[in-house]
Length: 293
Image (tube, rainbow, N blue to C red; front, side, top):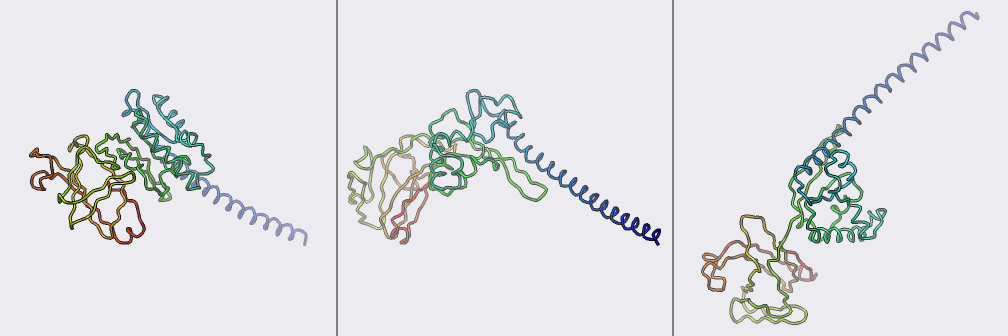
């Protein structure tokens, strides 16, 4: 009887051993596969930064800098970039906002305003890198704001990637746009040159704003630009206005005074390009401000 029990016990232990061996073998293979996928994904994401580092080293000229996430990564990838990169963390330090506040909209908007000022006031800054994986930069781009940030940036390169899970993203390289003043008029007093159509339209300049008394279905208010527009390049003109009209079509016209008569002589003679904006009654009731670009 004891011999039979011993055989049964050995048989049970053998079954347990086989089950445990199968379990660990299965999970070892699974863990190995996960490790391989993780390593492959990490390499794929890193490769986007490798391409970014190479691009910067080839396109940054002497005395030019770039705003980046995780600059130490780029230093490790390309030593020639040392001393030429600025960390997004600098903007948070400049605004005196701790990174722990990155989920608070007002704090992020404050840092974003410093970001915009930095773009406008730093002539040596040439490129800005938008990286999906940095807590110091992500919220600055995703927060909803009506400001000039994306008018100051122009995409010049991108390095996308796709992980084994199907998740995809990219690193984007922006060039900092440099603007010259095309229109500089303080409309609290009459500008040096301006014209109105029709001629009998009245305009009032005071300490608050310029007010045009609308006297006909179509009113034209024409101001000369400080500098000419180079039509071979991409140009932007941004105006922020508040319109106190129930229903309105506003057309911004860029024209060259081809016949030299000092006024807009019509689309056939002087016309270059125009953009039309319409205000609805809903916007008029709300008293909204608009940015036209």
